[in-house]
Amino acid sequence: MSDFEASPMRVLPTEGTSDNFVIETRELSKRFGQEIVAVDELTMRVRRGEVYGFLGPNGAGKTTTLRMLLGLIRPTSGSALVLSAAPGSPEGLARIGALVETPTFYPFLSGRDNLRVLARHAGVPEARVGEVLEEVELSARAADRSGTYSLGMKQRLGVAAALLKDPELLILDEPTNGLDPAGMAEMRTFIRDLGRGRRTVLLSSHLMTEVEQTCDRVGVIRRGTLVGEGTVDELRGRASLRVRAEPLDQAERLVATLPDIDRVAIVEGGLRIAADPAAAAAINRALVEAGLAVSELRLERASLEQVFLELTQEGEEEA
Picture 1 (cartoon, rainbow, N blue to C red):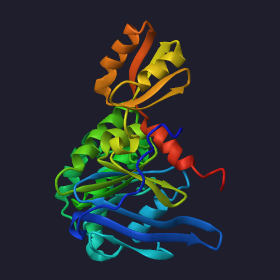
Picture 2 (picture 1 turned 180 degrees about the vertical axis):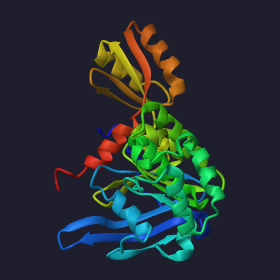
Picture 3 (picture 1 turned 135 degrees about the vertical axis):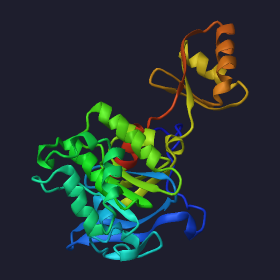
């Protein structure tokens, strides 16, 4: 990315009191032996009632972080609070539902009976089993052995299991894994609806479309450290105008003299202009009146994928 382009949003302090957050970590770290640093001084906050997307390449530390938040593994250093309780504490787990990695069920039991087993273990009324099966649209196959389910159906059953306790916080690790395009779209809508009101969703994913269409805020993790955080629009940065006109050098000089133009540069055979998009008509008019041939004028903005790649690849060569 050139110095002309807007840099993506970096980690910024999050305003508010502890009551506004369901997850808070401070310099949370996890080492395996002396050589492997899975999570490195991670500081993040997830607000109550939002869908927070947790993005990162394979091996970035996403699943390790989720497992620490659930108390499944202990951190090497740092601290965390989940629903104002220590990770893994009974009072916290009673209000959390989670789907981490690929869900596993008794293959010889039906989907309904698998959930009944889990409901009894969690002290949840059996009536919830039918409710969550309906929510994830598995009622029609609930009597079939779970061993006959497709991978996508097992993912749905895993989400149903996570919902049994009607949790305040739902932690989902790649929930659309194995779903066909229609199923992925339905799951995105489902997750979006879950993250409204009192319920909060922490969604770990590597799918840009899933995060862009589902999440209120996004945190990007690289090598165990949070390297970017904000809304999707904040991460993508300010839009610019893309103009192709000939002669190009003359067009650059002319545009630079126009009012309300922050910066202009020649990039990849055209002009990239930092200005309010409303200035597009005035720019076009000025170029045409000067006798220049304008062949393209459009709004250009970095995609979430471009920002993600920049954030996660930055510094890799030095490493």
